[in-house]
Amino acid sequence: MKKLYSALFISALALLAAGQSQANPAAVNRACGKAPQAPALIEGKSASEQAMRSTAASVRGFAKESIGYLTCLDSHPVSSSYLSQPAYRASMAAMRDQAADRLEITVNSYNAELRAFKAQQSQVAATN
Image (cartoon, rainbow, N blue to C red; front, side, top):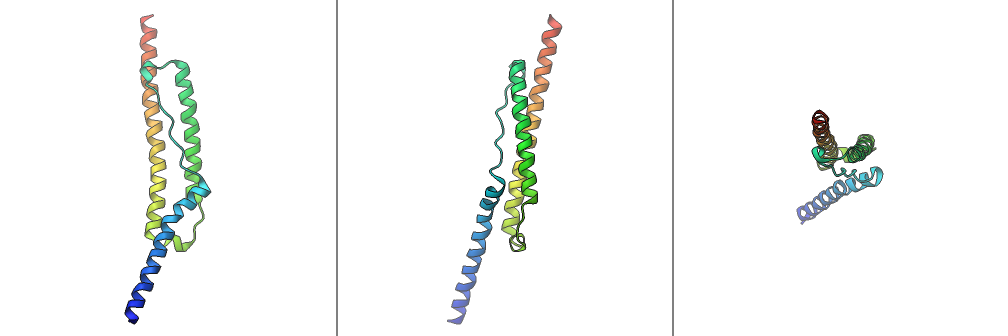
């Protein structure tokens, strides 16, 4: 009977620890806010100059918000009890990696569209 109670107690502690590690990203969201959403990009070879300027401003704003979010994630104070939990460390690493990947993909995609826009503009200028 004592083993049964010990097993139930240990199971309850494990569930409590798992609940804390899963709830903690919500605490990070409260502290740092939600991850910024990437702006919609336009097709560079058919875009107007004004549309490209507007998209550039959106991408710059997104990059600034993303860097702020990543800085907050990196400096978010956590107790050592959370850091000792592998599930918590994994969820924090995943949140940071997703935000960093989204930033890199968005900036690289915009740069590709900007190159296409500039190629189209130089082609138009060459024909005039």
